[in-house]
Amino acid sequence: MSTDDEMTLWNLRVCVDSIEGRSVCGLAVGDYFDLVRSNELRLPEGKHFCIYALQAALPMLPAKQRDLPETDWLERDTLVACPDPEERLILRIERTERVTMRTDDLT
Image (cartoon, rainbow, N blue to C red; front, side):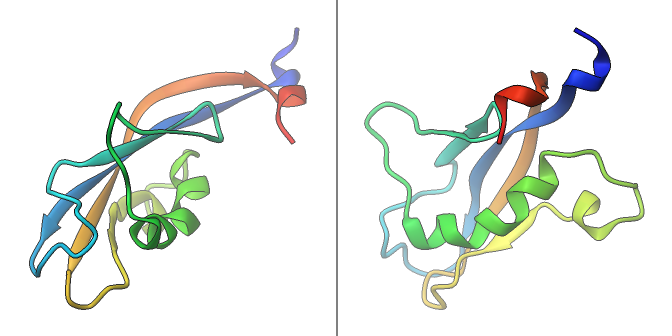
């Protein structure tokens, strides 16, 4: 297989960084989910993640999976705010591991 058949992405962890209001959804600082192998969402056993907080992070995830120029704001910014104004919940997107995948295995 040549390198033309491969691409490199980052696995990500999206973690609750802070909650300045009341946690209506039941999340706590340190709760997280992992995005691995391009599209696999994984939660720790027995845990949940609020779909509204999730939807706030979703638009950023494809960009954070890729290396971008250092001057690009998407490369530098890692924080996302949940849309619930009473919670004031902030998520942090972290790169955890670089993975190489076959392009043909992805859509």
